[in-house]
Length: 243
Ligand code: MN3
Image (cartoon, rainbow, N blue to C red):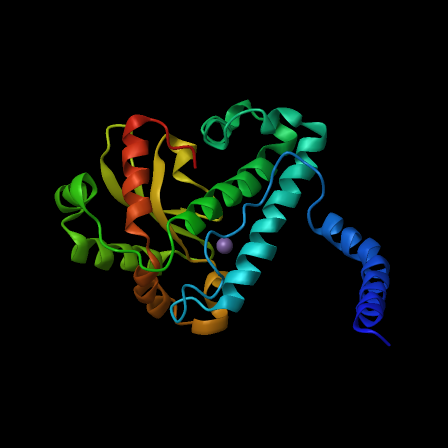
């Protein structure tokens, strides 16, 4: 057999396998991501990029399954209520009273979850640097500096009973505060924005930390991307930060 015909055979065999596998793969992808206006953005870094602070398996399950579930639920809600996808997320969550009664709780939980997790993936990353400039000045003046921010934020996150989030919020005039929210509520629901936040639902840390939420809260600071947080701070003050 010449090398050309051998190559053809290999190609043909590979093509057969690919052809046989294609419909099933397409079906699996369709089942995971039904058509709809809401989409899950891929992580901007590999799932293992935040190790050892957050392990790759936790990142994969958290992003690909937990966040995807919010997207799937939103797309199901949008089938009969396409208006929920017609405005920026921050606008919908900022005026939940305008959402029909029948879907308000679903939108609150799932769009809140979508917003919270979109922010969460954005503000983490490898080689996160340090806060600088106007952001650092605001942390110093409003939160008593970086050390006090971390101590108070970790304490607040430790006090969340059940599932929820701990945030540094930013008000319209740029003032920072440490606040918590239950479930998937988001500061946009009362006219503020999340500058940064940490997920203290058990799914965010249980594989690696089990019941040691305090250790997770402490280690999590190593994952914060301060460049992105600085950009979010500028956008929040300019009124252009959506989620
Ligand atoms: Mn989560």
